[in-house]
Every structure is written in C-alpha cells, then in structure tokens.
Length: 68
Image (cartoon, rainbow, N blue to C red; front, side, top):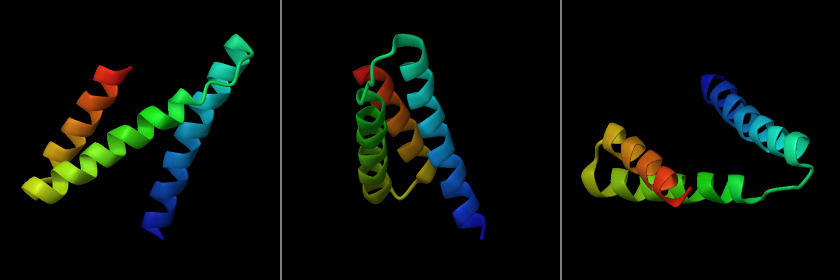
C-alpha cells in the first residue's frame, strides 16, 4: 500500500509540473518527462554500481539539473 501511495504522489508531481507548464505557456513541453526519465535512469545505474541509494538519488538529481 505504501508503494502504491508513493507512486501515486510521484505521478501527481509529474502531472502537476506538466500542467503548470501548459497553463503558463500554452505549449505542451514534453521535455519535463524526458528530464525525469534521464535522471531516474542515471540514478538506477549509480545505485546498481555503488549499492548506495542516496548516492544514486544525488547523481540523478545532478544529471537532471545539468541537462536542464
């Protein structure tokens, strides 16, 4: 149940960010989802290499910020 709630919160954050961009600019910007995907992919790779979850989160956030 906790896994489902956390996944629902994550989807809500992504959807609200997309809606904010569309509401302000009136243009659908799909880069929002691609930055999230790249950050998550890098995070998973780093977690598998190091075995440390916090390092993976930090690396994913850093890569997403670098690309943005």
